[in-house]
Length: 304
Image (cartoon, rainbow, N blue to C red; front, side):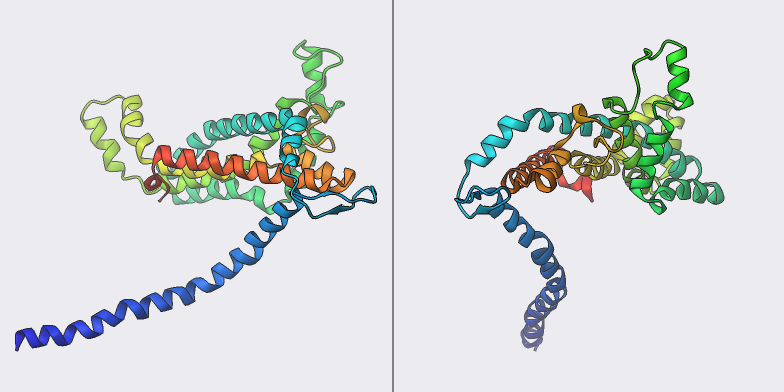
């Protein structure tokens, strides 16, 4: 009888995974359709455009389908300084954003935990820039550091800047703008990790006569590593493709142009669609390789 009972129970349990699997696919269907429509379709269109060749008529902006793989080598040869500059700016801005965001996130998530009002106020101040247009904030910084501003005049009068030197249009200003714009993207993931940190670990470290530096290095930093990894990815990836801050219309100049600015110029001004598409594909592949290496190096568990 017992064996018969076990035999009767195996039927429904064997069908359950099939039913749950079917339900899971139904729930995934909207997400898969979204990825197919808004990611894969533009991606395939971008790759096809990057392989196009000039039209036989020779008219500017007219291209026909082809397989010009040399388009990729041409854009690398022509724009390799912009590629290196983009990743250098992205790396510098990510490091500066981390140096600013980690103490801020630590204060909000750990030190202000027992003061909910202060914690909520600090979080509001971190999120507040999202309520203002990104372009307006960038224009505001351009006006604050304009050539006629009191900041530039003070720096020139004190000798920190020469009389013919300015801030707008320099790499410093571009990195400054990138760092400022993406600080919330770095702060929030780190805060979400530190907010779940068990304070008893820190108290145990102090009870064992560990110095604050040792406690931070042995306990706080390893436990906050998932937030650091998420924050660096959310910061580095969009910065590498940014085209606003480095534009000569905002905080940059022709000497600070990044890949995003080159893509914009080729698409909207030169009408060299294959070159712009090839640069976009190369940027995406480079970021994908860097992120894959980064995740493999740190382990996927740190992203959970």
